Length: 416
Image 1 (tube, rainbow, N blue to C red):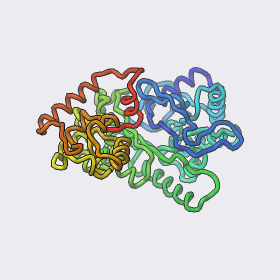
Image 2: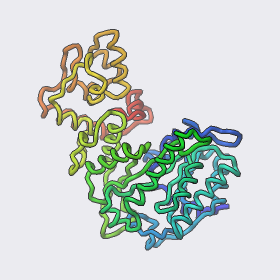
Image 3: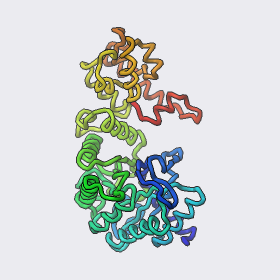
Image 4: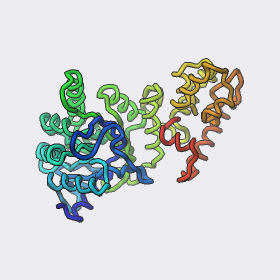
């Protein structure tokens, strides 16, 4: 049984990883305990955005790597502890039976060697699946440079795996994480994508990473711009089919001359998530969202910023505009766009109709006409001023536990 001291150290060490949200797994209960199917992994979130429904834990914080930004780096003066596969498996089952958790997020520092660490992680998963018959959601952080056979075996037991990119460029990796390289991180991700495609094509019995892969980047520890980060994100989605790319604002948990002394604000991270949403659901490309050598503007969300750069395309008539163009209008999200398409088949839409559909007219009115009527500002300067003032007002208002249906829906869907 793992003692309280080790448990505290290992769970504290795992809190910096944000790569867990909804599972999307297809693992059903076939005679054991737990269920990772679809929404079978129910997640709760703390006010700072951390997911707390999974047991997030390191197997070890005794690392042979010396990544400058990591609190568990080789030369850090911290207590070193490890847990055995048996202890992690037993702890997961005990917590599940007490209804503390719905699944497991398991990671580890590189203890002794990549293969040694990966073997212990795989052994933990096999204990949970085979001995305890646990069918709940498991997210495993892979170990760079581990043997391909171990990676392939792990993917047959985990619902999701992630190899964190950590830093957006090879140059920054060499400087701040010398034992890692771009290839050592991308190679296993590429191999898992290929194996998953073969697995599906051959319709083999069983599951192979049913919830896919994710990754995470630290924002602000190195000098890369948001434009570079968004381009990397786009290539990961297109080339490797990742489910999500997560961003983590740099916080100086350790001091080093190569690292900034001040934390990066949450607003920059927020803008990157908004840009990520545009890539995945709104049909935008990285080139449209931000120039490669620039950051995203902090005073406007990326969709509004794009619209202001392309005012020659607006206003669009909501009764005639195609879906692709409706999705590019600030204030019209995916749900609203579908409602507009459905409703205009039966009537000629007006601004009153759009208001009932919960279109955010304080933004959208500057970029649309409805039945030929336009209620927006008539100059770029005026539009920018109103949008910026709206952003400032929204950011200055504390979210309420008793939020309106409109704000709750926006928070859940991420509509811009």
